[in-house]
Image (cartoon, rainbow, N blue to C red; front, side, top):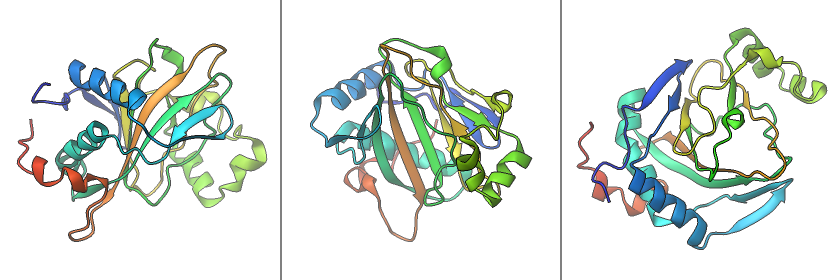
Amino acid sequence: MSKEWFNWQNKTLIKDQVYSLHDFLDPNVYKLLKHEIRNVPNQWHNNYANRLLVEKVCSPVVLEFATRLLPYLGELFGGEYCVTTAKIYIDLSGSSMFPHFDGKDFAVSMQIYMPDIDALDLGTQFCFDHELNQQIENNPDILMDTKGHFVPESKYVMPTPFKKNHGYINFNLKTVRTLHKTAIVPLGYTRESLHLNFNVKQGDMLGLENIHYHAVQGIKLT
């Protein structure tokens, strides 16, 4: 496996601390992660319509990857972070993510797209209109009342197309969070991805990274 697990320079600031990622993971690491996600036992469920989901990934390579990101996130956003959650999504035909904010209980979210076949228009879409985001922050019921149509499609931007080894990072500790959603998955397609959440570290608190924390403390930022 490559010493460098990912290409940290392969990110682009889009707006409001949302970064686009492209060809992010070393190809061998990407292949190993995908193999592990599909073959290492995890607790899957389908409690949500048209979605297979692992809420608490325990796969060792996934957790080490998340741990290796910590010093880089600290340099990018300031402060120290811990790994809060690691999830696997397989969105089946007909599923979509309703317009929403990331929860206030974590600071950074990151999603790596892992499809077998690219589907460019299925990337996560973000609304960078501060006024609209603020209105929804003040009154979240707006989205429920209008079934998400309060924000017109023209207001959404897709930082990254849904291609393998692409994705995004969203910094969530901002005055106004950034609304985002996905399009409906078409018939016969699956939208597969790895989703990581990070929180601000409190004292000596460790999150899911506790297994690998000491092993990666000497990582030199590149």
